Image (cartoon, rainbow, N blue to C red; front, side):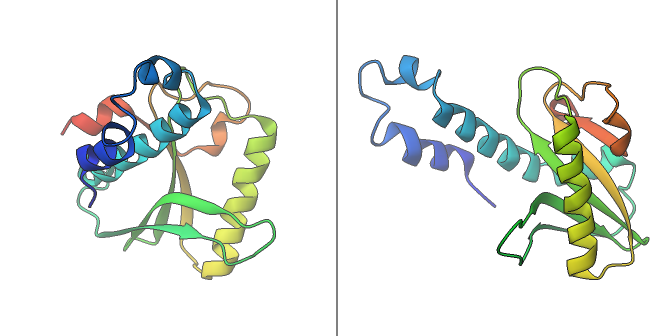
Length: 159
């Protein structure tokens, strides 16, 4: 596991955190957005028990992992996989955004391709369930039906 404070300290405080004006300029930067997403993923990974609880699979044996395609062109990755012993595999996307996350048509196609690539490359026969973990949920548009279930950031702190 990761020590979240140590990662934060090494990234920001040790070198940059004492520079005058750093925090006010950094908070508006793309680097801040990237770090926030990375930090959110770490928080999610520290709360696997709560994720399993929210999905209703607390009693199911799972093997958590991530996945990256072996294809060099058009490769894909999945943030978190819960490989279950009940013939289902949860493919979980983690998205840090302050408002509801909207799955665009283009991203819906990417998700479908990512799932197909995962199924093909891993040769699994398990049924895939696409799940999202977001801060404020998913926007209910025409692509919402791709998702089996969603988990909110608040759910990570309940049990």
